[in-house]
Image 1 (cartoon, one colour):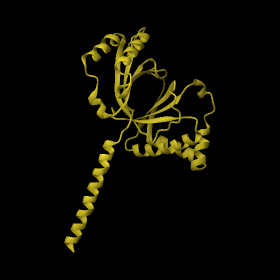
Image 2: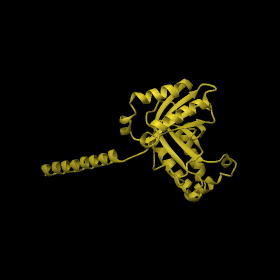
Image 3: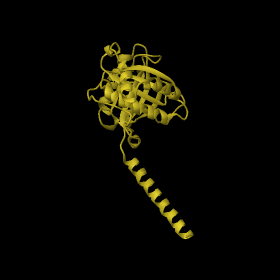
Length: 248
């Protein structure tokens, strides 16, 4: 009887290991979207020359595919006036095939660096497709970006919160957003990023309060206040900005 129990344990353990291996292989083979962003502060008076240099550089080295690049401009907040150079979408594997030829570095150094006052942070942000919602293929003009500081140990609750919000936004049907997670946390309050896309500033003058009624139509009366209580219990603070997309 003891030998039978030992055999049964070994079989269960074997099945568990096999299942875990298959899941890991499937996870490794699954594609995903990730972007690399680099903050660039221009020299005063050199903004247009910086845009021109990056536009020319991107046409040669970052025009399509996994290394496609574009330039955004931060319009609000204490980083207003900074540019954000975005490359991707890509995966980690693609980073091993970065442009390494000498001409690539020389082109950046000669066309762009003379107009740069300071380079800021470089980060990798991975899109969570399960939490994101998109219904329009037209490239937007702007995006509102929230960088969210998630309280320690509350990431799973944040994911659950955003999953419920996605359902409400889908039902509301007039806004779309993406949820990203910072791949290398620098303990600076930039754990997750939520981006809302829009084309016209008039959107901020329209009545957008009906998200509450939409949310409560799904989850019940009083659920919005509970959701807001949950938000404050799982986050420390939010840095909010508006970016102009595609300056190049």
